Length: 213
Image 1 (cartoon, rainbow, N blue to C red):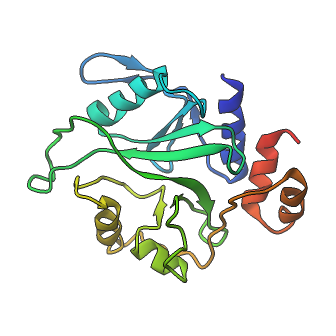
Image 2: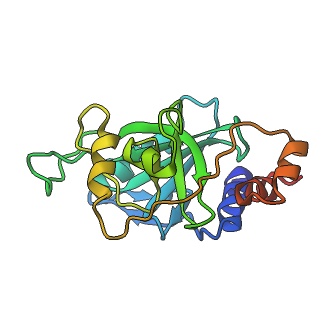
C-alpha cells in the first residue's frame, strides 16, 4: 500500500471509520479497478493522488467508478494535515427528468473542501471551501445551506448549478437525517497547536495519529 494511503487509513480508523484496502471492482464494461480504499459505512470509494499531480492513474479510476459504477468517490490529494490536502467529492449526475436514468457522461465535482467531524453524531462531512460556517450560525443552518455535506448520505447531483443545495434540501427530509450539535473542522495547525488541541478534539487526535509525530 502507498504509505500516504496508509496514513489516510489510520486517520479514518482513529475516527472509527473502517475501510477496505484496494477492493477489486469490475465495471459493466469488464474493466478491473483497484481504488485505494472503500468506506462501507458511506458506500463511497477513496482515490488518492499527490497534491501537485495533474495527470494520474487515479483520475482514470475515479472517472470509471463514477461514470460506470454510479458510485460516489472522494478524491484525497495530499497528506492528512490541514492545508496539506484537498478533499473533493465526485458524484454521479442524475437526470432530473428521469431519476432512474444511468446516463452519466462525466463525474460532477462541485464539492471541494476539507474534512470535518461531529463528535456527537460520530459522522464525517466535507466542509465546502469558502462556504463552511461563513453564512450559517449553526450546524443545522450549514446543512440546509449546503455548506457541509454528510459523507454517509447517498449523494447524487441533478446537474444544476449549486446542485449541492438541491441534494441537501432533498436529503434533509429523510428519516436518517441527523443534525450535529457541533462540527469540528481544523483549517490550520502547527504540530504544537495540534497537540494542545487534541486534548479535547477528536479530529485533532486523528490528524496526529496519521502524522507519525
